[in-house]
Length: 145
Image (cartoon, rainbow, N blue to C red):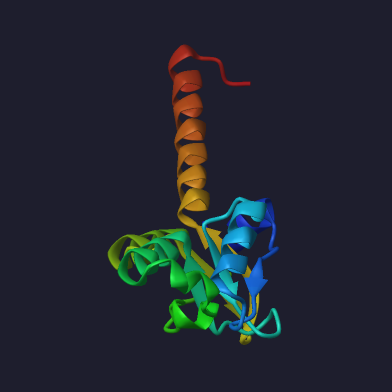
């Protein structure tokens, strides 16, 4: 399976914020959209960074509540690993596990075209296992419709 298959199911919409957005505004976006990370982008298509709930919590713990008035650019990750829609799901799973991040922007020709989360990966894996279980159970019971 490839990342394009995940995006086909979940859609390609991506929440972005400009780098000058105050962290407090970022938190509102995360809560409003019920997501764990947003892509930092001035134009909504170029990936300049990514910022997650974890980034906010860690920075709050280190620097205190004054960080809420700072721009997102003060806390975002600027060295973002991206993948293409043609990437194999297993490779992205490995990347997320080894690098310990939960969101990966999907980029085509330098343009943001989606985000894959660890939740998307886990949902896909559960769906695959359920299909396999059903197929095996049908095979064992002889119910091959």
